[in-house]
Image (cartoon, rainbow, N blue to C red):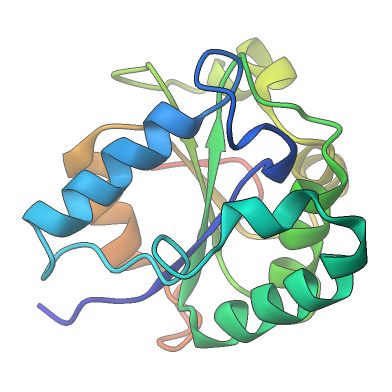
Length: 175
């Protein structure tokens, strides 16, 4: 199986806060990538220098670096969780650029859930960053919603790709 490359959007404001962020989730994803390199290829997992993200003078440089990584990606992964800062400027900027500039299919993975049903998006609405909420309201982006389990993530990442022009059906596709 050809490994597709995935851009992970994250809340850069909270990358050092183990309790009130998804940092532990990113560590889990990095472990999956190390253990299953033929199945997971996260383009920004090892290339982001988190220490530089808090220096206001480096915002332009950081965004430029993000754009180069987005250009390499086949799809985008957004982690939804109750600790996510849904208002994060950099997170919502990343999602906007991936959708509007690079036309990447978006996979929203809900941390801590084992399954989703047709009511899940409404039920976990507060977990979503502002941009996906907007896209869902307008049905203006192709997004697949999955529980964050290794097998579901592997299948979704292997299915949705900008390079193969295979996208979720609409903004509320449960996969």
